[in-house]
Image (cartoon, rainbow, N blue to C red):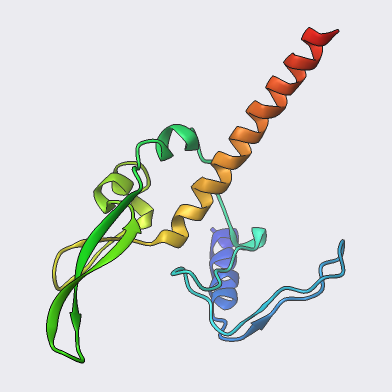
Length: 149
């Protein structure tokens, strides 16, 4: 219990950050970008291994992402200059599709009870899918090389 409490307190103190500039990376000597606030909505998000527990790799990211269709569509918006309701062209995904495979990437608007997508949370499954594709390509390239011999 003592370890859990101390881990929780460390996490709280690390999460209570309002200004950040990353230190030099030991391996490359490069510095990160400055981030004024941490959040999970497309800004900076704390991601240090030291504050994470129960790390589990995403399973079947390609299979799950294949269930999310990308669309071009029109969406209503209010033009406050003319006080008219108009339609504008947009691209995106449908929140219900995302919720079926990655519910953490979906939020509910409290006033209208509509679903929305936190697109920055889809980056992680996309990274996992690219890694999965890369492994498949490497495996196929190896098979091709063996067939040439």
